Amino acid sequence: MRNLVIGTAGHIDHGKTELVKALTGVDTDRLKEEKARGISIDLGFARFPVEDEEFHLGVVDVPGHEAFIRNMLAGVTGIDLVLFIIAADEGVMPQTIEHLDILRLLAVKEGILVITKADLVEEDWLELVVEEARDLMRGTFLESAPVVLTSTRTGRGLEELKTAILEIARKAGARSPEDLFRLPVDRVFTIKGMGTVVTGTIWSGSIELDDTVTILPVNRSVRVKGIQVHSEDRNRASAGSRVAMALSGISREEIERGSTALGTDDWFPSMMVDAFVTYLSRNTRPLESRTRIRFHLATQEVMGRVVLLEKKRLAEGDSGYAQIRLEKPVVTRWGDHFVVRSYSPVTTIGGGIILVPFAAKRLAADRRGLEFLETVRCGKTHEIIESVVREAGYRGYPGRRLPVDTGVGPGITGTTLEGLMRRGVILDYKGELFHRAIAEEMRGKVLSGLETYHRENPLQRGVKREELRYRIAGVFSGDLLDGVLARLMEEGVVEVAEGEVKLASHRIVLRDSLGEMAETLLTLLSREPLSPPDLGKLTAAMGLGKGKVLELLSALQKIGRVVKVEESIWIVAEGMEMAGHRVEEYLRKNGKGSASELREFLNVSRKYAIPILEHLDRMGVTYRKGDYRYLKG
Image 1 (cartoon, one colour):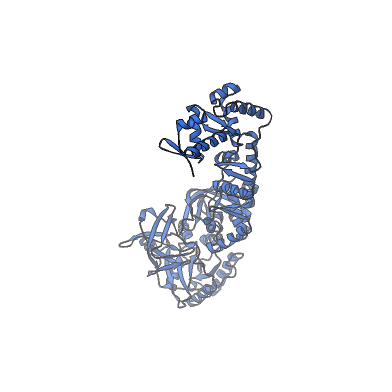
Image 2 (spheres, helix red, strand yellow; image 1 turned 90 degrees about the vertical axis):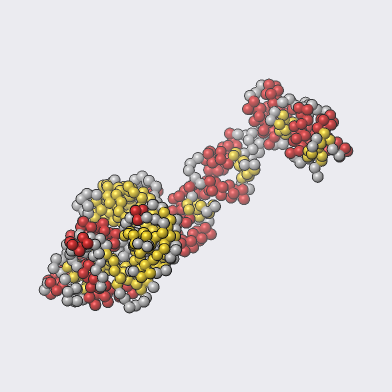
C-alpha cells in the first residue's frame, strides 16, 4: 500500500479548514483558541477516505496567518500533494504568495489549485480570480495544475476535487520502505496509560512495534510500544504515513516539535551544513554573507547565519553555495529542502537544498571546496560517494553514513560502494573507507618518511610505528597507516619486525668515520672475547659519550656482529658462538652442570659467566632446573 500526504496552503480565512472538513468529515481545528478566534493556529490532521486499497491518504491542514508561518512550515514539509487554496471573494493575498514561495523552495511537485467560496461571487468574477491565480502560478509547479471551483456551503466542486486528488494519487510514486526510518516530530503529548506520544509524517523507511528508535538531538534510545495511523492501531507503518507513536523510556519534557525519531545510529545532529541556497527575487535588497537567519527544515526551526562561499552577497533571484552555521544542532540529510526566513522583520527570503549534512567550517572562495559541492549537488550516486569519501581525506570515512550523506537508501549505496571497491577507487581498511588517491598520497608520505629516517639514523634498523606516524604528521586514521603498510609489505617494499618499520632495501652499513669507530670497538671487544670491557670501560677507551657507544653497539648487534648479554656487557658474535659450543660440549659429556662448574669450564669470572649462561637459556640452548643447567631438546 502506498501512503501519501495531502497538505493545504493559502491565505488566512480562505477556507482551508472548512474544505478539509467537507472532504474528510473531520474538523482539524482542535484547540480552544482556534474555536474562539475562528482561525487555525496549529497543524490539523485528518484521514482522507478512499475505497481503493491501493493507497492511504492523510491530510495536513496548516494555518494561513502570517504569525503562524512557522507552524505552516512544519506541516507542509514532507507532503506529496498540495491543495493550494484561494478564496473567490478575496483573490491572491500576501500569504498566498508567501505560501507559494515556500512550496517551491520545498520542491513540492504535485498540486491542485482550489478556488473556494465560489458561491459568494458572480461567474465573471470567478473567471478573473482564476486568471489572476494562473498568472501567479506561471513558471511554478502549479502552472499546469488542475483548477477546481468549490463551495463547502453548496457542495459545488467537492466531488470533482476528490476525483482530481485520486487521479494525482494514483500517478504518484511510492516512497521506499527499505530506506532509513525518519520521523520529524510535529506534536508531542502524553496519554494516560500510554505515556509519551509523538506524531508526524514518516519521511522515509518504516517502523514496527517494539522497534528501538533514537530521538535526536537529545540522543535517547527508546522503544516504540504503540503505533497508530489516524487512530487505528498498527503493527507497522511506512514512509508517507501520518503516525502517532507511543514511546517507552522518555518523558514529554525531553521531546519537542523539531525533534527527530530515527531508526539507526547513522545520523548525527550538526551545527553546520553545506547547502545550495536560492534567494527569492521578491526580496528588495541583496543577501549579505553572515546575515542572521531563521532556518526551517522539516519541523525544526533554528537561528543561524548564512555564510556565502562564492561571493560576498547574493542578488535578488540569485543562487549560490553557502554554509549555514546554526545556534543549535539540527538533523538533516543530503537532498533535504529547507526554507530561510529573515531574522527581523520575519519573512520568507529563500531556501535551498542540503549538500553536506555534517559539515566542517569552510572558507569562502575555496576552489577545491566549491568543486566538491558542485559534484555533490549535480553528480550521480557513484560520483557523490567517491567525492564524500575523498573529502574525508586521511581521517577516513565511516561507510554506514553513506545513506545519510547521499540521500539514497542502504541497498543502492551498498551496491554502488561495492562496485567502486571492486574497481579499486575506494579502499576499506578495517571498516573505514579511503579514496585511492588518498591512499597513494599516504603511501608517498610513508616511503618519504622512511627514507628520511634511514638517512638521519643510519645505525638504526627501523622506526617505531608511532614515531613514523609522528614524522608523517597531519590528522589521519591509524587504520589508513596500517592499511598502507600492509599493502607495502605485500609488495615487498617495506618490512615490519619487532615493532619497527623499515624499507626492505635498507641495510645498516658502517661507513667512513662510523666504520672506523665500529672497527675500534670490535677490536676492544675481541681481545678477550668472553671477558670484554664493560660499557663503562668501553666508553672511556673510545673517548665517546655513553649514548654514542650504545648506538654503535646497537648497530653492530643488528648486523650480527655483537651480542648484548646484559645492559653493560656486550660480547662479539664469535665469542658468544664459542661459549655456546663449549657449554654444549660440557653438558653432552656430563649431562648437567652447575653455574660454578660451567664458569670454571669457560674460564671466566662470575661477572661474565652468569650473563652468558642466562643468554643461552633465553636462546633455547639450555634450561635451568634448580641449581643445574641441561641441554634443551
